[in-house]
Length: 281
Image 1 (cartoon, rainbow, N blue to C red):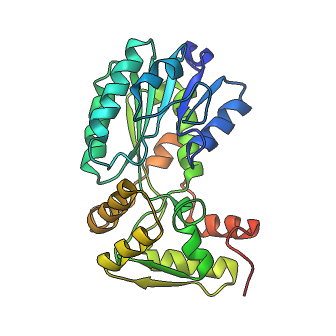
Image 2 (image 1 turned 90 degrees about the horizontal axis):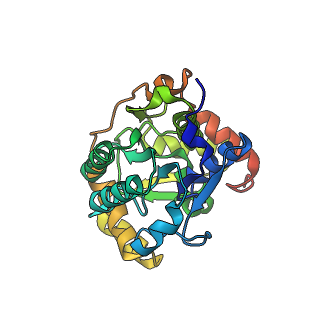
C-alpha cells in the first residue's frame, strides 16, 4: 500500500540516537523519507522535561515516533506523553507510533492517551530488548564476564530491536497498521541466565550469570553513579515487572511483518562477530 501523504512531511523520531530510534531513522532515510531527530543534541532540540522545546521540534512534522525517556514505566510518564500527543495533534501531526512496554501499568496508561489523541496511531508493546546486552547498561557486565542481576528463573521473550525498527517503519509507510497494537516478542522464552549462556557460547568467552539480592543490585547501580531516576526505574523493572507476568510468547512480529521474530541465538552470533563483547579469553 502506498505511504500516506503526510509521510512527505518530516517524521520526527524521538530518541533518534537510541537503540530503536537510530535504526528507524536509518531505514526511513534509506527510503528517501524526510527524518528529523528528536533529542537534546539535535537542531532544533527536543527535551521531554522542557515543553518549550516541543513546538520547534514538531514544526512542519507529519508523523512522530514516540520513545519516552527514561521509560514509559517511569512515574508520570503517561501524563507527559498524553500532553505531548495532544500538543502534536494540535500542531497538525497526523500519525503517532508509540514504543511501549509489556506488563507496565504506566505504559498502558500512556497507550490510552495516544489512542485518544485524535491521531492515526500504532502501538508497539515490546518485551525486553536483546540489545540491552550489547548497547545498554548490561554491556559492561558482559565484558567483565560476570552478569549479576536480581532475577531468577523467570523467562523473558527478548525481542530484537531490528524487529521493532522494521515494525515501526512498516507503520509509517503502510496504512494497514493504523489503529493496530502489536505486542512484539522474540520467538522463545529465555531466563537471563540462559541468555548469558547464549552470549558466552557465541563469543567463546567465560561469561557467567549470578543471581543477587535487590539490595545488592541497588548498591551497584548507585556505585556506578547512575541518575537517581534511572536507578529507581531499573529497580522497579527487575523487582516488579519481571515477576512472571510477561512469561509468554506472542506473534506480534509475524502479525506486523509477515515473518518470524529473530531469535536470541542469531542476535548473539551477529553481535559476537562485531567484537563488541571482546575477544575469547
